[in-house]
Length: 139
Image (cartoon, rainbow, N blue to C red; front, side):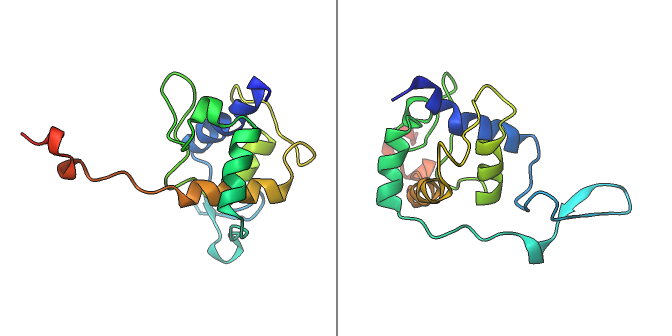
């Protein structure tokens, strides 16, 4: 695996933290104040992917190197991607045209079907336990 592949999802999270929307490019309405807002009727639905295949792809593309085996991320290497990943359209947009340190991954490098499977894997990650349910954290 090439180490640069781990930057795939890192850049995605950085871009989305800056205010990316879930609507596809060009599918936004402009309000009277000039602020862009997504058009709900045009917001894309995430394609159906295979979570098991996505887990294998997450590893083979090297995403885990920065984002951890479960997409949990790290302050030292890459942001958290799961559970509750960003909207699929935003993820795709950032993977294809990142603005951070992550290199771009065109559809020739990571096909749309592979990206859908990776997204399904990220969606399948369980929520962490509630803080008050962890005995060591109770006082």
